Length: 334
Image (cartoon, rainbow, N blue to C red; front, side, top):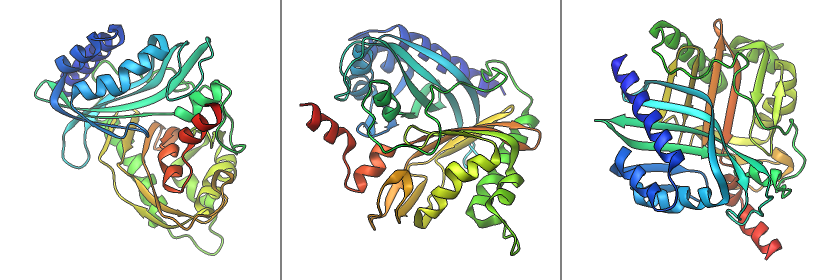
């Protein structure tokens, strides 16, 4: 427990210093809290970066120059030991908010409030952050700027809230048994998706989902797919369509899977390899297998899951299918 609390204190101090830093000070903050060989994983076009200086100059300084003053609005904050190797990781989720006053990645500024939805996992070892996975919903920011890159989505487009009870900031120690229950619920759901349950002839997707999810579940999907509510509407508006749109589904495992209290999550690099057969996000079949980098965050109620916040690197996935969303946008606005 003390290891988790120490790691949480380190990440909170890192966030406070990073959020306050500007320009050349950002690299210094990164160097103070992160290992010299930091491995940082981010969505396309950032991908993997090595070392604090590269992360500062490639990601943070340009973002802070575009959304200013940048403010972090936390919705989830928790820690845990990785289900695979026992390493300590700290996870957070929320929005990075600012006035969108300068271009970022070619997205036109609006001079209005904009919110970049994000989730992050930080591995903490020997008093430093040694690995980070930070996933962020760039298409959501594009939509806020009036540059929707995708066909109409099946779910709702929203600036997404945190957990229903507003209790996702686990700064204090939690009952370890509650975290174990949450991790068990997540792992049960993952196993079922992978074919762990084989129902009879009358088995339906809704029947399967009811094994893992409460009836009033909320699925907060990424921009391009959208959010949906209740098991039946989730099956209709995302899960069923998603399963029908791919062949050759390969689960590549998770780099990290943790839980604390009634919250948990995981990420992979990549989680899935899929071959589009047509229909997903209104796109045609390509016949080309592609990787999906995903972060999932969860809230548990009882023994089942009730909320799920999902981050998918759709820009990276569609680039593998031959559609460079950012490149196309910049070509149109040049």
